[in-house]
Image (cartoon, rainbow, N blue to C red; front, top):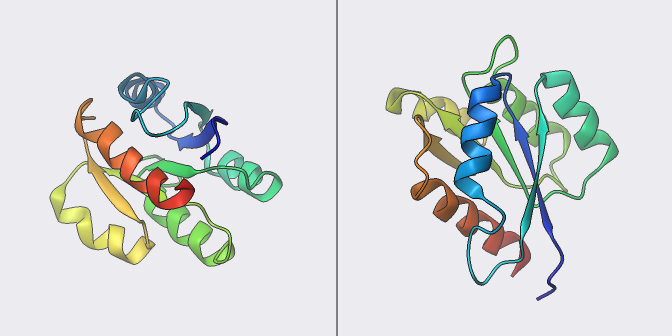
Length: 133
């Protein structure tokens, strides 16, 4: 496996959420994976634009609670529009009851709020291993 950096796209309109995710992930989520670079976007249009222009992401993390464009709808749209080359999508959800929305959105994984600094890197590593190993 290459030692190149894996790019992770992080979408949330809430700067605090983006900061919590970035701090939880650090620069390396697992010893057997290359370092990661987190690229942040704060709006739905910015997320869609960067995915249209740059497909070189190992993972997309979306805030399901983002307003006005929520991560659930955006995940569904991204999965529909980029079926062949869509990176895995991890959705951050506030309520366990929203799991059905995660299924509808075709997200590859769900992570609960508040951000768990131990569990989130494990989930990200699992998704990245499936992509890069």
